[in-house]
Length: 167
Image (cartoon, rainbow, N blue to C red; front, side, top):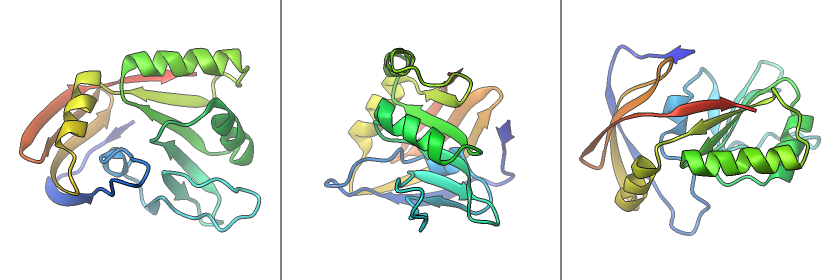
């Protein structure tokens, strides 16, 4: 799956120090029509809030992205509550992705249901160092085949590969 746009663009990212952090680039990497960041689903059967979601025309999630540090129990509940949605989990490094996979295997989560994105740990560390209350991003591209990100964040250029793992 490749997501390409013909135009590059600038955008701002606001960061609240007190809020749980979301990945500042997730909405652009997973760009789809009608996607929403931090949306309340207004569905009493789904008491969970996604970091990024795409809803179909019946308001059922078709894409669910977890950007924070989800627990294995939360991932299991998401898989049960939104059985038809693509489930993605963004991780800051390959090491944290492998650790999450081990926890998921120990907890007996259903295999073949989750896609995990392992970002380059050095890139994540550098992004977090640059993250301020107001941030400027110049997005160039984000592709899944091959997995690669190209963007400028607060004046620093990033061109990094990432790994997609299936669980």
